[in-house]
Length: 426
Image 1 (spheres, rainbow, N blue to C red):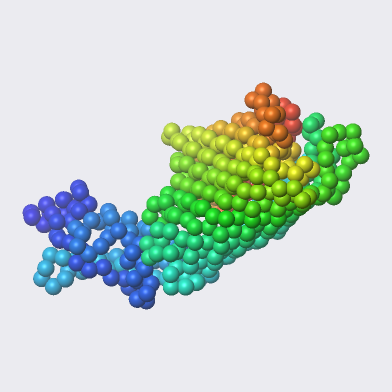
Image 2 (spheres, rainbow, N blue to C red; image 1 turned 135 degrees about the vertical axis):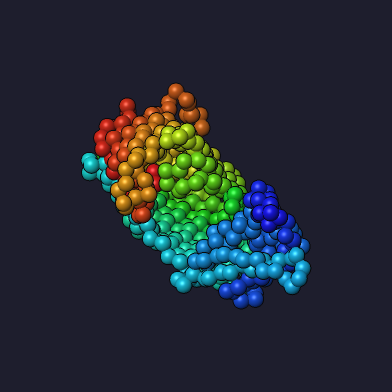
């Protein structure tokens, strides 16, 4: 009867009455790795045995992605009531280099389409202090390469430093006020930066904050310009400029699924203060790019709210677009990049319902629709809520192993109505 009562107490409270954690030991890793892992968990010798806390620690270790198996056991220490907490780990057989391949594909069934092939590489445990080397490459509509060296500075990874570089080459379509394409061009950019950062929550479970220095060199040049541009106020000359400044970046992702989430939120923002140099002139600038997503479900019904605010107060004239809208759920019914400017405001509400279909190749299938409103302006004085453009969509979507898939009917009063197919995130 005493034994049954003790087990019931554990079930009710999650805290065993048998004793305390007398020792913490890791199996399957070397001594230096074990020392670092001991600082990553909340369970410590001298604490009462709390099963819920131990299971949270196990989940945190599993979430690092370095181990294919993580479990634990309790061992009685001699005749005392203390227990040794033994965490057993099995390192991934395929580490410490990790590769991921992704594909974006879109078409509006009217001659407009593009693809992007993405490859990412992460090298874990570059040194004993847990450094990572992160790389991303992209081929297709946008050519890009990114590399970062990430170094935690203490055993609990409460703060870190990072050095990174990002290069891109992007094809840009330029549209006039009537929505007609009048030019194509390219934007080239190279950014380098150094940050100091702080994970938010244990192991960054709530997000990440960074402060640092950033410098960039950019070039925008037209490739093909319509003769109608001569009769308009568009300046499409080649522009080169450099930027240096201080930046602050915040990201917090608490969505339960990356694609078709049913609850949670995601916040991302990047703010830069600095100096811009163009054609021998120098001026101060401020750049902000932020987005927010909030998701909530009532039974099978899910509502997804999204917003984006972007702003830059200095940019060379003729530098093509700085921020743009267009494409599925990014002003549906407009061409990608059709709405562009230096000041951007956008909002979206999306509804979807998980269908009772099992197609085998997808986690789930969804049906829903979206309503969107937004615009982009060249000058701050042009901003007006009366000038907001609207778009809408109805879609069938699936969360597949290669990414989210959408087949949609899109419409915009000042854009077009038609079918849209997208493999990738909107």
